[in-house]
Structures are given as C-alpha cells and as structure tokens.
Length: 131
Image (tube, rainbow, N blue to C red; front, side, top):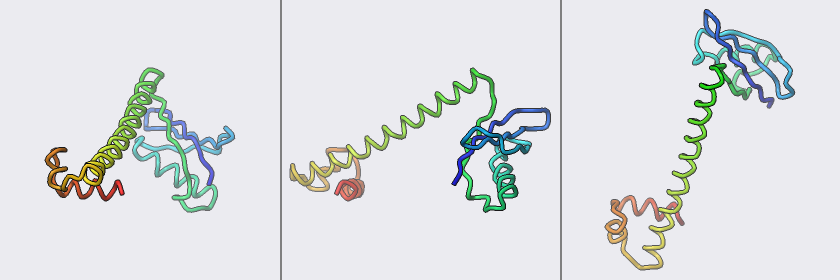
C-alpha cells in the first residue's frame, strides 16, 4: 500500500488538494469545498487514477494554514499523543497496583476498592487486565 501526502491549499471556493507520492512526485490534484470533505475527494481521485478500492490508500492531509497556525496545530497534536500515552501508562500502573494489593498484600476485592477509591467491579476489571 502506497502512502501519500496531500498538500491542501485554500482558494476562493474551497481547497486545492495536491497529492504527492512517497518519492515526492506529484501524482495529481483535486478539489474540495471543505477540508472535512478532502479525505473523500482524495480517495475518489486515487481510486479513479489507479482503478482501486478507495479504502486502500493511506495519506496525510496537511492544510496550509500559515507557519504560526501550523506549528500550533502540531503542538496540540503532539500534546494529545503524549497525553494518550500517559493515560495508557497510568492505566497499566493502576492495574498492576490493584493486582499487587489483591494478590501479594492479600486484600479482598472490597478492601482494594476502598483503598483505591473505586468500585469492586472496577477492581475486578483492573485485576483481569493486569493478569
């Protein structure tokens, strides 16, 4: 499966979508009234160009929003990715702690729930995911 980059440039009636392959060669361009509709337009364009299923393409749409705004968007995306990773790490630690309290310390499920401030059902979920 080929991966493409789509440079989206604003114009009076919407967005020009310049499709570039992994080697940096432009394979074509299409248009969309909105950036929200760009995904569908690019898929349809590539499907017609290569006589393939529209769902078989991977691409990254990069709207030209100006240097300052683009940097803000990337910072926000990066912060979101970091927060998602921190959430996953915390969930693993929480599960390990519940399992430790129950199996090694010898607390009952109800006692683990009281110590952690969660329901007994949540303790059951946590200890299942830790095992």
